[in-house]
Length: 183
Image (cartoon, rainbow, N blue to C red):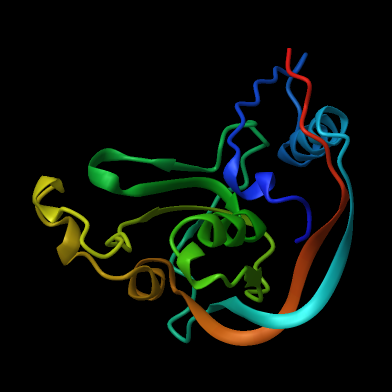
């Protein structure tokens, strides 16, 4: 929250290359530092009570396969054939992050992990996308809109559920930012 109006309108391409393999958490920290340097970004975090989706285990129990293989530094969730999402070695925190960025982002609720599941999991997830009004549906692959919603797919395919609740919402409050000079 906060900051000048150009943050909501200007678009930026950011390219970066790591010197070796790093964990996903390390890469996030490195990217955050890059943005802080390039944009002279200063911010602080605030946690307030607000609307969230709690990801929880459904009464049917988890339907995902535990993956105990060592870290391979691959992106855990990828698009597969016909718009199906393939999860490989996915921790629940990453699934929550992904759900909040994609399938449920229109609800403006972050997704928080309340599953109690601490491992990494493999799964396939197939659901109908949430399309904007008046989206031309004639060019979509056949059967795509016949799939379940993300809410139903999580229950049926993964044994998880999203429940609207109040919970801790993390906000990044911008204290200072400048347009970068460019390279």
